Length: 445
Image (cartoon, rainbow, N blue to C red; front, side, top):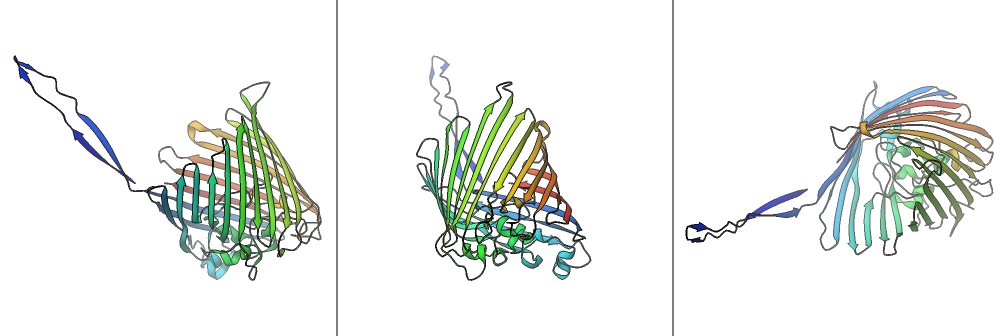
C-alpha cells in the first residue's frame, strides 16, 4: 500500500533590464514515496466431484470458498513482519449438512476436521535481511522437496519454522532451517491419518493437526506420544554452470529418520534444431532411521529420471522411477509425512511411486497458448507395485492414472486464474477406480 506525495518547487527570478525578461527556471517535480506496507492474499472457490466404481460405488461432491488475506509491513532497518488469516467455508449442496451425512455425499478435502468451516492465523513471522543473508522466523509457508505446502485443495500445509538463507557465494544459495510444528491443509482429509498417507505426504497423526492447529512434527508424522525436537534441514543450490541447476537437501527428523534429497536439472538446445529446447533431470532419495527410531528401522532408496523437450507452444516429457525392495520395518516405502511430494512420476492423486518394490513411469504433454492465456496438459502414469508395499502388502498389482488440466489467465482481470482438472485412476487399490473433476477459481492480489 503506497501513497505518493508530490511536492512542487518553482524557482524563478524575473530580472528586468533594458526591457528584457530573464528566462524562468523550469518547474521541478519531486516525488516522495511513503511506504505503508502491502496487503496480499488469494481468494479461492473450489468445486470437486468424484464418482467411485468397483469395490466402492458412490458419488461425492463439495463446493467451498476461502483462501487467505494478509498484511506485510514495510522494511525498517532490515526488519519486516507479516501476518495472514486462512480459512475455508463449505456450502451445503445436499439435502443434509456435511457433518450429518459425512463422506457418503460430501468430499472431505475442502474442509477442516469433521467437515467443519474454520479460520486461523496461518502466517505470523518476522523477517530480517542484511547483505545477502535473510532470516525468517515464525508461522510461514514452506515449499521444499520433502516438506511443503502441497496446495492441492482449499488450503495448504503451513509450518512454524526458522529459515536462514545466504547467497554470498557466487551462483550458490545456502539454506539452514529448523521446523518445529505444522498445521495440515485440507487435502490431508483424503488420507485421514492412515498408512497410505505416510507415502503420500501425510502422517499417522495428521488428524491432530487439522483445522489450523499447529502440532509437533513428530506427532504429525507418527501420532500422539511421539513428540520430537522437530526437523532440522540444510541445503545447497548451485547454478554456476550454464543450463544446470544442482540441489542437495538433508532433513534430520529427530528420533525418526534422516532423509537426503538430491536433484539435477539440465537444459540445452537440440543439436538438430536450436528452436527445440531439451531438458533432463534426475532425483534421488535416501532415508535411514536416527535416534530413538520411532518409525522403526528405515532403509529406503528411490531414484527417478526425466527427459523432456519443448518447441514453440508445445512441451512434453517422459519419466521413470524405482523404489527399493522391502528391507526394513517400514517395508522399504519412502516416508514423507510433512507434505513433501517431489516425485517426477506422481499422478494428480495417485502417489504410489513411493511404495517399496515399485517401478513407475509417466508421460505428459502441455500446450501453452500465451496470447490467450490458456495452458492445457494431458498425462498418463503407471505403477508396477510389488508385495513390499504397505498399502496392500499381500498383493502385487498395476495401478494407473490418466488426466488433464486446463488453465485460463483472464486478461481483463489481473490475478484471476480459472482452472478445470480431471483424473481417472484405475486400480488405485486393486478393483477400485474413480473419475474426478475439479473446477477452481483463484484470484491473487
